[in-house]
Amino acid sequence: MNLFEELKWRGLIKDVAGDDIEDKLNNEKITFYWGTDPTADSLHLGHYSSLLTAKRLAKCGHHPILLVGGATGLIGDPRPTSEREIIDKDILNKNLEGIKKQVDKIFEGKAEIVNNYDWVKDMSYIEFLRDVGKYINVNYMLNKDIINRRLETGITYAEFSYTLLQGYDFLHLFENKNCIMQVEGSDQWGNITTGIDLIRKKTGKDAYAFTMPLVLDAHGNKFGKSEGNALWLDINKTSSYDLYQYLINTDDSMCESYLKIFTFLSKDEILDIMNKHNKEPHLRFAQKTLAREIITDLHGKEEYEKALNISTILFEGEIRKLDSSLIDNVFKNVPHYEISNDENIVDLLVNSSVCSSKREARELISSGSISINGEKITDLEFVISEYFAIDNKYVVIRRGKKKYFLVLFK
Image (cartoon, rainbow, N blue to C red):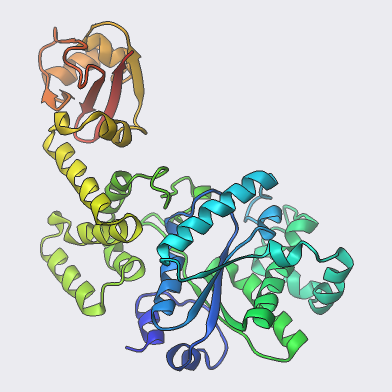
């Protein structure tokens, strides 16, 4: 397959602008850009899919420019339902630096990173109206889906103008960096075409673009912080273990698509993986491969092996093999409860909200559904003491197969 055919096979092309875009991608070495606003101090897995597409193009000899929107981030693009909160400049700059470091790491220092604030900050309002606003018709803007969907509920002038700012970014990079193509998620199509239109009207030349379908989970939800399910690329926000757990539980129906989008495995390798997976889906071969490829690419082989080791320990119930630092890391997002003195197991389960009543606690203990630090407890008189705790501090309670709670001795 040539590059364009491979991108289509991987499901990475939705909308296309430019009749000869295939020839540009397959036979020339071009400069292209992908952009994001620094609305958080870390990118997430939804961004990662776009970054990997940019990385694929870079591997084929195209030059990537990664734009971090220090200017557009101060405005915020229109959301489907409401206006974004204005971000404080200091916070935005902190976010910007965090994202730059992540992009630089993913591209191993080989990507050019730019900030659109650098070319917008000295532009006066009059200049912007003359050099940008004059070329874009209001009716044209109103027909943009990203704007049109907000007309009934209301849209501010700042949000309305966002597409002009992004369009100007493309024009600036076209004129100053010979950047002829933009690559974004499909939700940015309206902004992309504004840039292409602006370039054509001001320079008389053609620009190119393609969008990628937004990556969704099995329930049709985006991978994004606005959806409440963000998987951060920052290892301190989403640990390798948490990422492994998410990926290992990927729905079977999504595995082939994710392997195409999130890995550099070849077509033959992916088809072979899916063939093995479909023969014995309970072994989760595809999910394990997906987790290995993503975590290794993001955080390195050692972090992947660490996540795999922790998962094996928990699956086998050998909690005492975890040291204090791993317990803090693995169970940081589970419910916590602090105690100062020894407690009877029934009382502890109720007080820590593991169970709603003493009756339920007794039933779960008697049925063998409660484990303490990896040991199944069936004695209703069992006492949780500091001596029993890991490092005299941690008591990990497991209810059933997957629900964990952490008790800490003060």
